[in-house]
Length: 213
Image 1 (cartoon, rainbow, N blue to C red):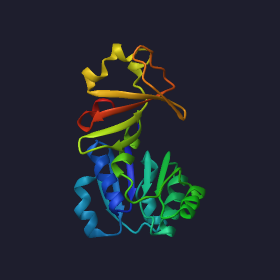
Image 2: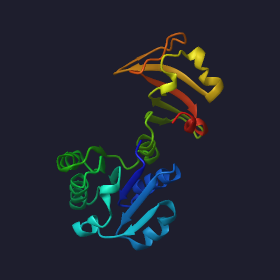
Image 3: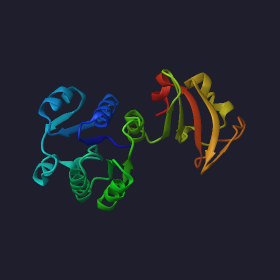
Image 4: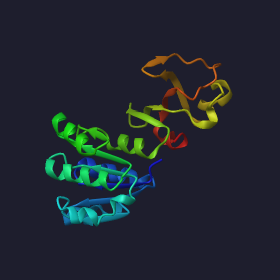
């Protein structure tokens, strides 16, 4: 599980991602060249730094080598995004995620060091945060204000037990609606033991998500 994050660039996506990660208990460093914005957002981060992210010396001072994840949220600034991706990868950051404004930019960022690319501004930053802080959660879909569907790995203590034994609906308030293996999904067999090479597609109240992460 990733525990420390640097969010570079405080657009809408970066702000929401930083806030959500911080609320989940992660150590979050935010950086942007807008001092007023950084001051406003400082309560939603462990560290808040106003700096010019196009300068290598400034990047060196951020201590990115101590981070588990660096997320670059500057899709309108190609040069800065490329520099940050290169610097983060050279610093040995295990996971470098970059937001790109186009597929061409995404391919460029992958070539210079990004491990993952996100394209769409409205792609949920909460979904990205859930991916990053959970070993189990694979995907997250909003259905309503209080209900969602998640695609998750089974918890270790569930392996080898069937759904009747686990009583997940009674204990955790979740409903397993399908079993996924690879690219195929299968109906639920409540008597079949859960294997460690499958994913569970689950309907769950948002207030109960923390119980399965």
